[in-house]
Structure formats: structure tokens, C-alpha cells
Amino acid sequence: MENQEIEQSLRDYPKQITNNSYLELLEKYFLSDKTNDLENKHKEWCNQISNKKQR
Image (cartoon, rainbow, N blue to C red; front, side, top):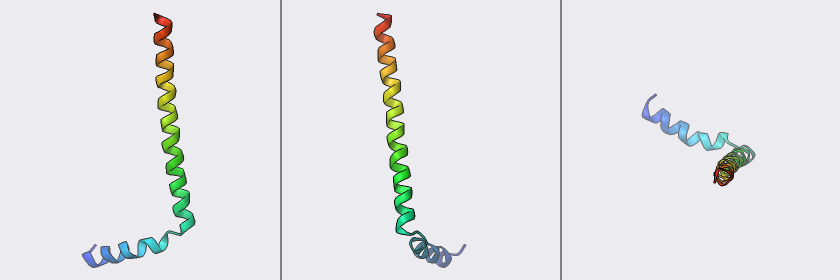
């Protein structure tokens, strides 16, 4: 792609994304991030509990 084509596609891209689709993507990202945080916390808690049982 030439530079002009790339620049034009970058200018047109925001027009292709509606507010709704942007919000949906943002929501999915947010939920995914929070789910990942919870999974990590759960692993941490399980490790702490198992360490206490071993003592």
C-alpha cells in the first residue's frame, strides 16, 4: 500500500466504527480484564489457603 492509501484508510476507519460497536468492544475488553483479574485473585487465594493447610 502506498502512503496515501494508508493515510486515507486511517481517516476512513473511524467512520466505519459506530458508537455502538465501539462501546461493545470496550465492554468486552473491560469484562475480559475484570475476569482475568478475578481468575488471578482466585489462584492467589487458593495458594494462600493451601499454604495455610500445609503448616
